[in-house]
Image 1 (cartoon, rainbow, N blue to C red):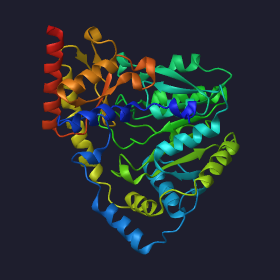
Image 2: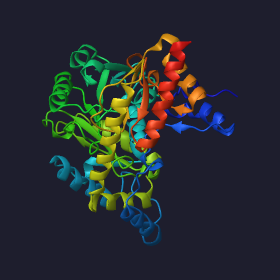
Image 3: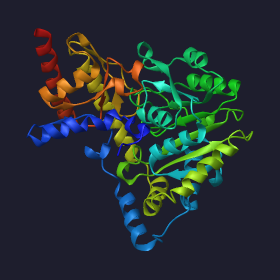
Image 4: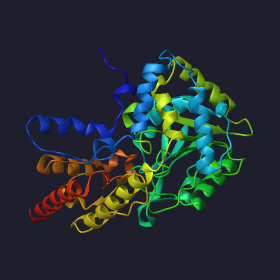
Length: 398
């Protein structure tokens, strides 16, 4: 029995590197895992009042099936929070709740695409979007993020790569895997291109409150003539990665997305509902104190600053400074390797440092790079990059 071609074509470099890593760990090799953006694997802790709300939900709240669109209480809390953050006025009917932003990406790509349709995605970019586009028979069309300009989007390339088959433009801001934060000017220019061509914008803003070197501008603040879908979630800012709750909302005054919304809702009804107790806790996380975010950003800024300085000291490695999120994408001098994947596997086997090959992030624009995280405490980062430096010096001397 053979698996379908579409399922066997799925690749997710962030998790696939774990396969050889686990084999080495089973053999007793000590690993430093810099491959997954999970803050709770390090010294970031889910606030206690979130946990208390989850325990209360399990004990006191109906544990039956919930609304396929998401609980009304959570959707209203999202409405209130989005207004507080960005001044955006939406209604609970505009909001939908998913099992993380990944499910939202899956459902939306399945709604937008017929075979051979195109969607513009950032390159390098988060691989789930590319993979879901391909899974549904579409064509991901990457637009360059310019490394020489601190990974800002190439607006001219976005404009040139739109065709009659383009269904929408995706942006991820703050950006995974680069750590870039797009300026307001860029967001407005991309929005204007979308409006000019009569296509919607999808803005993934899951890191919206994790900024420490640039001011975040939400696409929700664009003029009303730009149809858009804003995606967000609770894994990163709210330190709830394993709870799997995400959300999105539509801003579409002209009705361009009416059928898209219905197609998406048909799929959400098919999967029944998102996790009901975790939705209750997610609501509490939006309504309680947010001061923990200040300390989270302080630590991430300190660690990003260290990573930027330390990596640029290593021969054969260079990196642009991160302004937000929890990642950086260093460039590698590949003189001694065939590809960035060969580099990542060699580093893993030689020094036990687990990173992700840059070519796993939308191919052409991620090549000759690797992604690392800025989550671990400084002693862990120092040990990892000392190992990286020793590794680079050894290979250069061979």
